[in-house]
Image 1 (cartoon, one colour):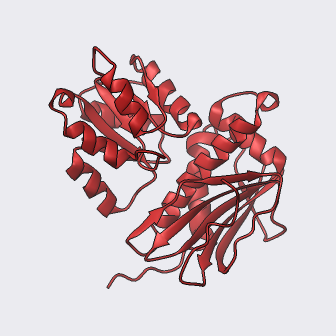
Image 2: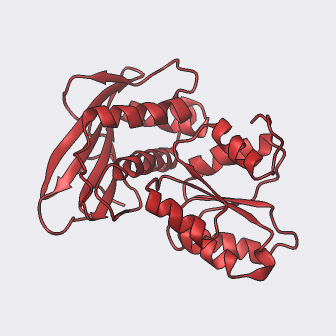
Length: 125
Length: 162
């Protein structure tokens, strides 16, 4: 699942994930993502989550997902322009597993996903 | 107490080069070329506001053609197929990324607004002073990145329309 209010950024992340073999569902903010999750019979393995979004931001989304036991298997990775150490700590404390700062290269995303065991080491996007 | 020197044009260039190499010019074919200070293009403006320990705005201004190139590059579509909505989305995301990286150079804690984009008019930011600006040429078209610090106790949203 790719959650970002920018269509361009969703497209970039979707392209990377698709090339890695993922099937991607997109959402434009945290609220829309929660609504889509609620309607899914099979949960996504992974959500790439922007921070600054209208309606429900990424930190609120991570907090909401972590409050639901049935979403526990999901891996959450923040992909955001928020780059201060204090913000990274907040996101990880809320339940994000990894953190990527924009701008990123496809290789940076792949490396993080490999660290999380979601793609093999050396995978290419 | 942590000292936060003001961002400089060199800082903006480093950030912009990271954005260009990641999204707009990954092959290194059409780099952003830094230019001497000149006239700020007025056709398309995108801004994010910073509030908190530091107050102000980060603004990118594009010529119409530069904004169209940005949308084409970010969305991976042909230049001639770019719509106004594409431009709004793309330049909004660019200012979000650049603004977020500028914010990391500023005193904490502070918060970044959602981007505001205006096409077809010049932006206006009341009660600010310019801290630094980067003037650039891309695809032979002008763009500028500016950091504007608020000079009053509040940062007025003003600037560019939502």
